[in-house]
Amino acid sequence: MSRRIPRLPSWLPFDAYLLALAATVALAALLPARGTAAEVAGGASTGAVALLFFLYGARLSTAEALDGLKHWRLHLTVLACTFVVFPLLGLASGGLVPYVLTPELQAGFLFLCLVPSTIQSSIAFTSIARGNVPAAICAGSFSSLAGILVTPLLAALLLGSTGGGFSVHSLLKIVFQLLVPFLAGQLLRRWVGGFLARHKKVLGLVDRGSILLVVYTAFSEGMVAGVWHQVTPARLGALLAAEAVLLALMLTLSWYGARRLGFGRADRIAIQFAGSKKSLAAGLPMASVIFGAHASLAVLPLMLFHQMQLMVCAVIAKRRARDPEEPPFRDDPAGAADSGPLSDPAVTVGR
Image (cartoon, rainbow, N blue to C red; front, side, top):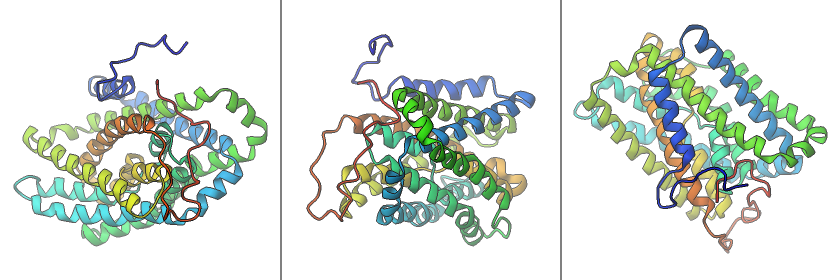
């Protein structure tokens, strides 16, 4: 049964899902959603993410959720990566002006460093890599909730903007799109948990489908807004190079830094994926408040980084899934070595 779908050679650094991501970007470039189609795509993307969190809530036991909340060191590590290390690297990018980046692109580069972490893709990649999924859920959720207040405050401080601030609309959007479905899944778990356990592939399809849909919707918006025509190819290449360095630094620092702090393999995977990524879904509405009419160009670095992180993390997650289990550190904090992956990961990779 598993041999029905053709598989790419194992020596290639990507798989069919990466090709699907690239094809989604190409589709958005050639046939971006406009007008009514854009509204439908946006609504479908919102619904897919809500369904994703309902399924996670229905699958995650209360004991696992409470166990995830206990890993306060892990959550503080992710928050430090997101709101301390990232902003410091963003400030350092000021040295790239005007030779590498224009002032406008550097402002967008700095803004992407202030955005909270992703949730759904961090969970999906953590699951693929056999990491600590409950911790990834909590870490991503904490980052998103903190970002509602922290991101506008950091933007006002570092970008010199007086706009932004606490957004009730953004808070309600996160609550109704992420928290409410998750809690609903928890409440209904006793009735639907058994069904989902027998149909594990359903959650995997939702994971991958939701990411593809979010990518298509976001890149369609960028094409319609014409952000790709506001920078020269040379500046675009320089921006991509700077973001590649930024992503490589954060992936390296989050992985080896977590190892240095004594986290076990499963926790390090959650820290790496939650601590090295930025949320396009959270960043877009925040940028519209902070940058106003200039938001389309300001989010260009975030849009490119978002796509880059999905592709790179897909490769890393696939390779992490093949890693042999490692013995726990002797200096592991209590409970860290026991926070292994779930026995029924939501997303599986062809092995």
